[in-house]
Amino acid sequence: MIAEQKTAEQKLTSEKAQLKKLETKKQEEKVAQAKAAKAQAAKEKAAKEKAAKDAATAVAKQSHGVDHSNSGNAYEWGQCTWYVKTVAPWVGTYWGNGCQWGASASADGYRVDSTPEVGAVAVFAVGQNGANAQYGHVGYVEAVNGDGTFTFSQGGLGFANPAGPN
Image 1 (cartoon, one colour):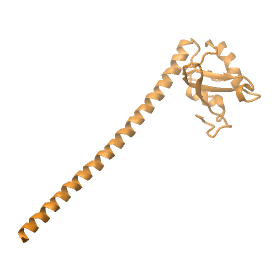
Image 2 (cartoon, one colour):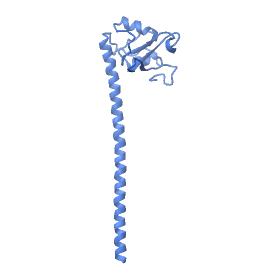
Image 3 (cartoon, one colour):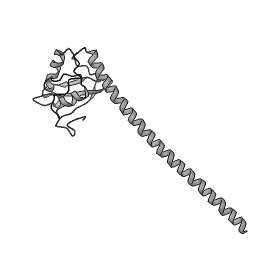
Image 4 (cartoon, helix red, strand yellow):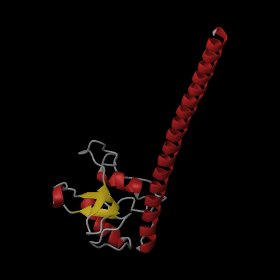
């Protein structure tokens, strides 16, 4: 009877040890899955950023304008123009205030029209859709929807993150 009890206790101890190993292995798998998901998210973010940069380059090449990518950023930090120049380095080093960018881009050889395109600059006239009543506004086109509407990012002192994106 005592021998049987000892055998049963040993078997129970062995089963508990196996269960603990399984739980540890399961926890390790969860950690590995979380790391893999984080790595995948970082990879997707990098791919999205590269796609946006490639789109901006394609817009610059497609519209046959002067590429100012190596000219730096002369716009004042915290202005919408500064933000857009950072995400679309091909834009002019000084195209003026946001409301002047359409004319400046056209003069620099870029195609300027009212058709939104990923990687393009959205120019808002003075007061248009809430743009500044004196300077206008610019944003960077991030996505174009099937119905012709678009999503853009922007910067400026009137936003939570003046350096963008907002």
